[in-house]
Amino acid sequence: MEKRNNSLTLYENAKSLVNGMTTEDKISYITYLFSPILFFNTNDNKSWIKYLVNFVDNYNPEIFVQVTKLAATFNTELIHQYFHTLLKLNRLCEKDFDNILNKLILQRINSCEFDTDEIKSNMNIAIDIDESTGIEDIEKKIIAESIVLLKNNGVLPLSKEKINKIAIINISDSDDLKVINKTTIMDVFNAVSPHMDVMCTEVNVSDSILEEQISKVVSKAGEADIAVFVVDLVNKGIMQEDQIVDIHKIRTEVIEKVCRVDKPIILLNFTDLIGDLTYSLNMYDAVFQCWHSSQHVLEVIAGMIFNDYKPTGKLPVSLYTNIDKPLKTNNSKTLVYPFGYGLNYSNIEYYRIYLSHGKIKAGEDITVTIFLKNKGKYDTKDVVQIYLSDEESSVVQPVWKLVAIKKVLLPVDEEVKVSLTIESKYMALINKNGDKVIESGRFSLYVGGGQPDDTTAELYNRDCLHIGFLVE
Image (cartoon, rainbow, N blue to C red; front, side, top):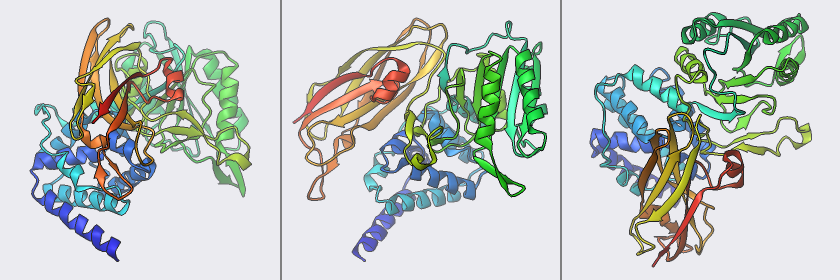
């Protein structure tokens, strides 16, 4: 009963804070609720994302883009502008906005993650808003900045002058491919490169002439310069004549046969994966995580393949796979791509770091300055990510917390200097007495384009920068 009363009191205090906030303060706070920093530092980030996805879909799927897509931009300014524009255009009224905030806060309280300080610390945040930008342009920018390039064996970006034929392959469980249909795909790719011959072919797993369809797909891939494999099904099997048709098995068979014609294969994944991959990756030369399908998404990804758009998205969840493992070991999943990971078409070097102070007092902030250089062939953006580790805490703490992010433009051959402030709130912990305190001791900061873990280092072929400081 005491816990329930405390939760009710906390909720009433939070509602009071929300009622006293300006519109821009409310936007700043909901931006935080949709931010990758919250996603990473939440104890069960997958549950929080799933809650947001379900809540948004049930509340107003017409207005909100997918939650994972917003977070995958790793661009808090863009998320802020999106909500600002929705309110400005009255596509979301302030009463509805308050209702959304209150329900999200209640969920945070129920999961024992909420602190009224998180509202106060996310108010009065100055964001430059371009009022001339329309909602369609913002949504298209969100799409472009959320698509994550997970793998690239050097085949991307493609040259419009060198690619004459492209084969689009799709595995479906019906004749209706919904948004991803032949006409849409052909129109989109032909718009990107009018001279290119686009061949669309599919394997309908519900069809009785399955082998004939697979042979046709392989033949088309052999005629093309490159094959693009579309995945828009998450289910591993469907019932057909009282038997389960294993979609993953069929997909693997198709790809294995396409691989034999020795053509580059690009995977476009249009499923909203929350942590689990449902396909093997070693057979693809390039892999894009596109989150979900729509006309705009297809337009952007087609342009991205040919370098009209640059991939800059980062994963807001870690992706695991249990594919190719025996059924008995299905619960033993392998980390494939960690939170914060995502490639671009260039080569970014993080090469220098320093702090505003080597020693600070408890409650003081500290500023980190990093130098980056784009040593590749294309202008791009990268997300500077800073992770904090408490090296001498008196209680068990996360190995590291995500404490700052900044998406920065990196022109070719230019050095870019980025300074980010680490707020003292991230150095706090709950001690054995249940008090929120900042303890003295050594802290470490890790800076790079992803987490400071071995998997990320191997994927990027580089380590994060590291620097330490003392709290007195």
